[in-house]
Image (cartoon, rainbow, N blue to C red):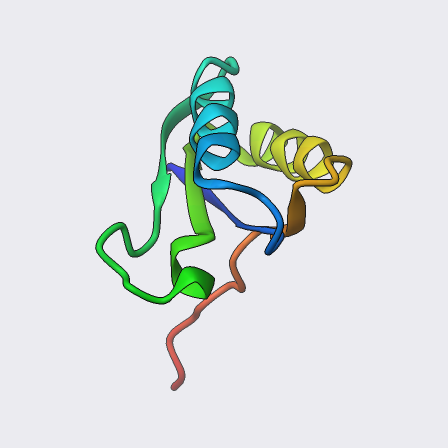
Length: 86
């Protein structure tokens, strides 16, 4: 089962910095896909929101830890669990 990491760049992170970090993250072992959540968004706040699809929970936790150490990142986390309400 694929896991996801959601992360948001800080307001000061340029498009170039965001793209470079996305490319760097894509080269990490266990990372399968990286991209903007809303690539065609006009609002800068939405364009700073990204995701990474990773192989497993251990990789997801490592990616979150690494991203949260970067000054260019405002936040990084695993998405909330969603279950079926009975």
